[in-house]
Amino acid sequence: MTYQPVVAATGIVGWNVLNRTMEVQRRAFDASPDIARDTDYFEARIGEIGTAEQLVSDRRLLRVALGAFGLGDDINNRAFIRRVLEDGSIEETALANRLTDSRYKALSKAFGFGDFDTPRTVLSDFGAEITDRFRRQSFEVAVGVQDDSLRLALNVERELVELAGREVTNRVKWLQIMGTPPLREVFETALGMPPSFGQLDLDQQLEIFIDRAERQLGTSDISLYGDTDQLSKLVQRFLLRAQVEEIQTASTGSVAISMLEGAVAFAQSLKVR
Image (cartoon, rainbow, N blue to C red; front, side, top):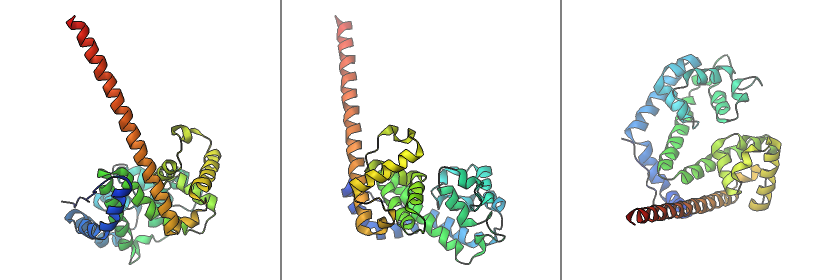
C-alpha cells in the first residue's frame, strides 16, 4: 500500500504545513512498498534496455519512465510513446518537437533512443536519475488527489527552477512554459488569464504572459524564478487566486442549488393547490 500524504488544509495555509512536513512525508512515501518495488525493478533492469520497443514492451519499466515525466496517463498508448522515443529530440521533424506538450520532448531527450547510437539507458547513474524523478512526481500526484492546487505548486517549484537555469533565450523559456500544461496552468491562474485566453494567437498569448508577469510579479525574466523569493511570490499568488476561484465557484454553485430548490418547492406548492 502506498503512503498517502497528509494535507492539513487548502491554499497558502496547506502549502506552509506541507512544506514543514515535507521531508518526513517524502521519506514515508518513498518507502511505500509499491514505490520501492517499481523503482528497484527499474534500476535493476533499465541498463539492459537498448531500444524504445524493449522499453514499451515492459509495462513496469514504462510506468516508471512515463511517471517520471508526468505522462502516466499514456501508459496504454505504447505505439505513440514508442514513436516519440524513436524519433528522438534533435531533428525538427521529430514527433516530440511537433507536439504542443513539451514533456514528450523531455522524455525522448532523457532516454536518447532516437538521438544517439547508444541510448542513455546504459549510463551507470541513469536508473537513479529517472527513479528520483519518478518518486517526486508520484508524490506530487498523491498530493493532487487531495488538493490539485498543491500538486501544481509542488510541480512548479521543481520544473521552473530547472527551466530557469537553462541556457536558452527568455522567449524560448516562455514558450516551454506555455507548452507544459502544469506550468501553464500555474501562470494562467496567477496572472488572472480569462478562460478564452487559449484561443488567442500564440504570439499574442506570449506577449500577454510577458506583460502581465512584468506588471504583477515584478519580472518576466524566467531565469530569475530560480531565486527562492521570486518563485515563492509566484506560488503564493497562484495559491491565493486558485483559492478565490474555488470559493467563487462554490458560491455560484450554492446560489444555483438554492434557486433550483426554490423552484422545486414553488412547483410543488402549485400542485398542492
